Image 1 (cartoon, rainbow, N blue to C red):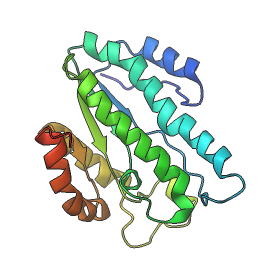
Image 2: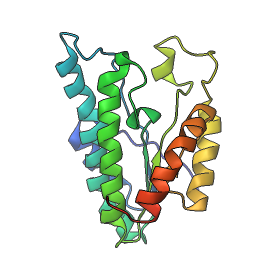
Image 3: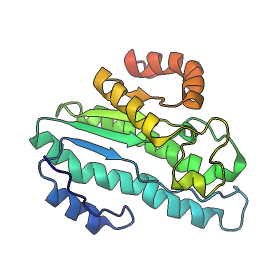
Image 4: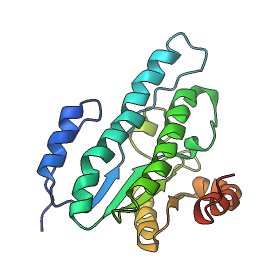
Length: 196
């Protein structure tokens, strides 16, 4: 068919609800919205920056899930894919402390949504990329550095994981390296169902 762009701003709940009202035929929802402030944990504005990032990276994601879950259910279940980050597993440098904290929170919420939406046959995915050559990274000046992957490569890997039915996706070389250490934990907790 054709692609129809729809405006959605995760800072504005009304825009999320309006987008959901327009997309009644959607079967796959990928939330790629996120912001990164580059804030040290003891910076004077750290709490304010954390609140700003929480609004988009966590609350906005929850609002997307709440708005689109009924539509996915009506369309047979579908897929809800959340773009988290390797930063959700650990804080790599202090200047991304607030970002990592919000991505850890969104990862926890993704896990909860996986369980909550299972009954309605919605497949939930959590994607954990390293640095990708997007506007977010361009602002940091990291484009061209070793380990920064392209959005196109990441998209291909996400689709592969989607087709394979994998809850976790580590799409780029840096993320894949981290996943080797994380995979045993993931298998024990997520795939074998061990809580403790």
